[in-house]
Length: 317
Image 1 (cartoon, rainbow, N blue to C red):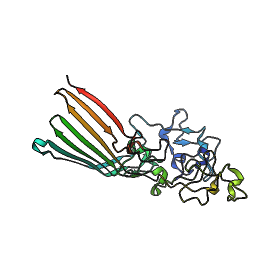
Image 2 (cartoon, rainbow, N blue to C red):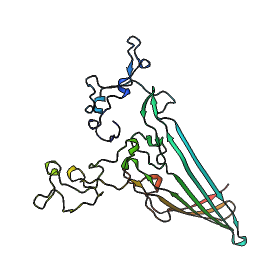
Image 3 (tube, helix red, strand yellow):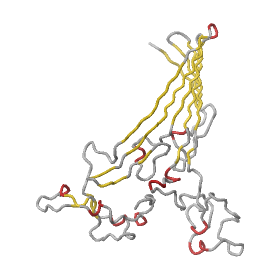
């Protein structure tokens, strides 16, 4: 059903029994010439009848899928993508003081839209606009392997050269994006994360059960410690147990924060064929932007290594 958390157990995800995937038959899906019975795209377990509002994905276990994609086919609709790229560079000749060359590169995405995915004319997945989203929620296909699609990206290079010395400061900026898994996309019926022991902070009851229905008091404590009033958005679920009656949804991570990175590069030309290079990556020692997943960050928004140093040499033969 639309808007459900597809990370939930099969027994908790309802099936839309009126879906044409389950009800509409197609003669082209006949697989036995001796028994040419048109089939639906998806068949439930023969021992299960579909009851709207009751039947879950568990009924698919032991069922049958009657269509498999052919070579060259993908589970996606048509992609429309438009962007504006801009590059500007200028060399300032300062005579004996050397040269200074600033270079600016920018990309602004005006459109990145996936059309509906249809199978035999049946809408299987709704299209979506991926700009400004992380694109990892159900139905977003990881933005077809591209993942997060910020509205724009900016880079600036400041290059200074004098005699055998070259110094370059490279800067990169990526704006913030919405994490659609956490925040949801209401227009596409993608709900925000529901309270659970997986989506909330590691504070809360010692055990679940009947005690969860009771507001903790001094005489009947159900919390590890007296937390007082839990701030909105702080979350109240202990690792390994969960108490819905005392839960507050975590509000952090709805957006992945913008990221700025600075790299410093120095090169000394010993001869025409030999040079020594020194690089400081992430010179400001910035942490990657927080993301609520297993790694705790999005790889497109920084590195967990912090400031790193490289020293090398280049020899031309």
